[in-house]
Length: 308
Image (cartoon, rainbow, N blue to C red; front, side, top):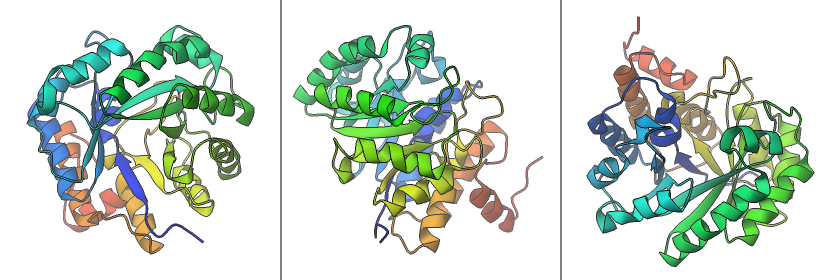
């Protein structure tokens, strides 16, 4: 029995755009969030509070948060890498305050050392005060466990390794466990095995999948999750994003493709596919390229859209 309804978190404005080399204006970022909300998205990862030295695309984080509409029933999340990032996210008061923050940890020591220059245990210890402060401020804390299904440095990742990180994050008070296939090497059987470990420690309502489509298995992996009842996924409008650790990676699974599949299965999302496709077309035009989304590109082509 598949879930009757699925919740999608569109991470395009944050995880997608932060990989773009060209500058995307604050106005266009706000317009993208506005269009996603109009399409029915009720969970959107808007920006990240990281040093502009490392991620200049996100330097306008507070300006974006201040400018977006905040309709009732929509949850806006931001990524915070440390306590300084959380303090910045809260500094603007109600005008810029997120509803949820995202923290992250790697499933392998190799990736943790290469990505954030510390061990997994050290990264968890760094996030402990962030989680405590966020929850004290009334914010929900969601996690992302990167490289849970493959590591660019280590290769194969075991379910035991992933479960150890799940346990560590639960111990510091993280409320939602996101399992991420960062380099897109996961396959359905492996995905189900890893998700089963997360479900030992978190309820079904608080486990989600974040899949990259590098090897074309993202939709199959989501289907495998649906088979075991998981109904919460990260997706990215127009397939925005990429993976700097896997050459040729196409990045996050496209929201349009996931919605198209779910509609075909009779699973509700609350999302208007036509409006979603328009949002994908909008940001693709801003970036000067066709959407990565197969469904989005096909539907826009039917409307007469063309790209050079």
